[in-house]
Length: 116
Length: 113
Image (cartoon, rainbow over all chains, first blue to last red; front, side, top):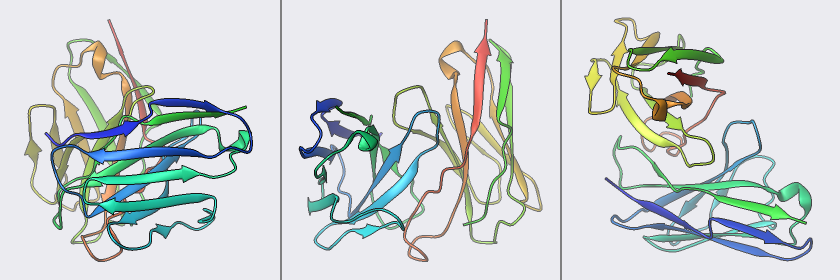
């Protein structure tokens, strides 16, 4: 089956620093990748849709200048949390879809971010 | 996207079939029903999807009512490793509004020995 990886799996950083999270599709090309955030005991919330070669589309209420998304290739998308604060501590999950069909999205294992 | 309604939680006995219901009464004719599950502290895992017909794969079976207003995910022989939150999602067709998956609260399934 299709495999999506994320790196790092967990990260602890100081308030005010920036953190970059990578999402890779290992055995397929993904024109579109998605970034989700999940707070404890809550469901996944879509943050943005990442399109290869173009600007990401952000969901309402998600600050595009704080959560920088780059989708430079068909197998890699990155999410950078800039000037992180404790309230940004969360579980960040990416997903990728193989192509233009009803085929499903495949999810990465997630990255747990703790901002001190 | 059509909204889905699922029970908040349910317990299942190990080795028995687990039947997870989902209501999607506002589903439109070209929307698919998808099921994912999320084991604690992991990313969601795709289980199965369908449009009108019942579907079966190595993980589960999906039964969709004739009017498509509800569906049931069946785990034929639940194991302790099936303990997870199960999400029923109705999805817009490709290209109509992106390919978003909108996650609701899901059903927290606890498989007991």
